Length: 147
Image (cartoon, rainbow, N blue to C red; front, side, top):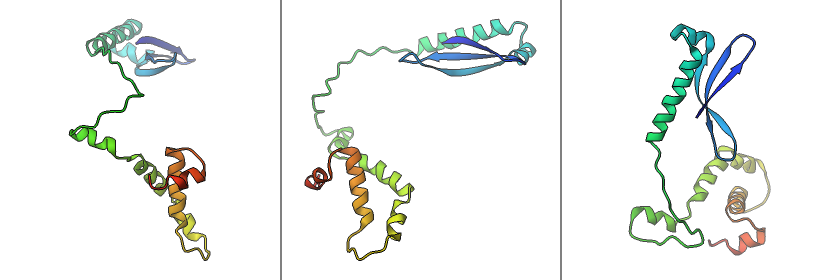
């Protein structure tokens, strides 16, 4: 964490900035305006520096270091624990299904009138979800429809 000051024409603002991986950063906390901090203390700059030091000290207490080796090519073993039972189920489509419902695509397909005896909405939903989860052609989707 570091202190950042931004001077504008009327006042100076103090922020605590957090450095993120990849070279980016974000505002972690807004300390306040220089004029408002003068009401609290005599030296706003020192007050802001002290606040940054407090945050850094509290962050150091919460740091835990893990050294874990993960091989993503290795399948996760299935056992009798409740947490591993979800590994055997493909539930990612549930989230996508809710997004599709919120877009009201079903209403669009109900408006399309024709002599079809099949549900356009269900076919579209299946193809859309399948394309996101398993990218490929429509033929590939049809060949793997039982998955």
